Length: 333
Image (cartoon, rainbow, N blue to C red; front, side):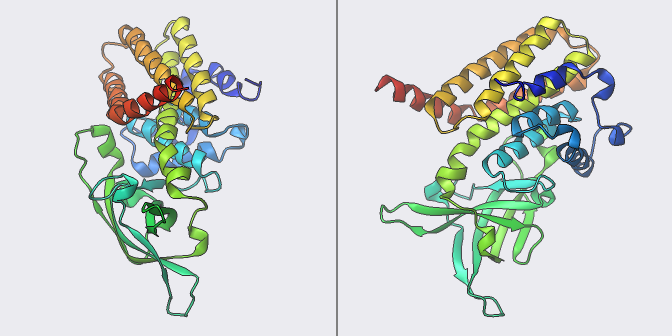
């Protein structure tokens, strides 16, 4: 890795326990509101101090500054979106909207993107009609990234486009959505169900490329890696705060460097899925090493650790499927 790519390691090693929160918000008592966290997040991504940072670095820095596991997840989630769609603004909160009533498989997506003529007779407009059942942030999200079908291709498969939808906007109705699993940290961020009733969008709101191959397929891997990077940043801050042995902090730095290398790679390549599996094993081993070093009176930090493990374990079935496919790719060569 180049010196520029190692900048994040140098930054972590020069932090101390008094710099673990942005100065402007350091006096805010937990739990933070979403608005308070997002203000802190914007301070970080807009700071000239971090002109050298990419999405991998921002995930680590954001995790280091996050007040709870919920917002460690949130910053990793946001950086995954930015990694795949680098042209979007950092100052907004984006929700990746794929899943519907029948699931998130491309063949199950029924939300439609169709031509529309607005009241002024503009034929360059489009309309979205459908429903998304899993909107991270719910009504707190500034912009929805909506996967929609434009019809079937010659092969009979759904042809999908990804569309930017600002919130609020006419025809978009957001309602609360209860998660099927009990994850308190996810409730802290909130989720919603979006009804799209002839929502008008323009050509500039439709992202280039096929939505499945360009955004949906690589997103889960991008999300796993960026969330892992954010958790590593959070762990390093705790390593400073609780004066963990230098050997443990060195292992966290090693994890950061390895995650960073995969983040700048091609997420669709089979080797990335195999290497990610190894990183997850390394992370699990690191958790075992850290456990005896948590202060016994720090219940909130222990709960954060458990929440982190829940998030990482939540996608195990999909991860195993990708890993099996990756190993089959190499065994057949």
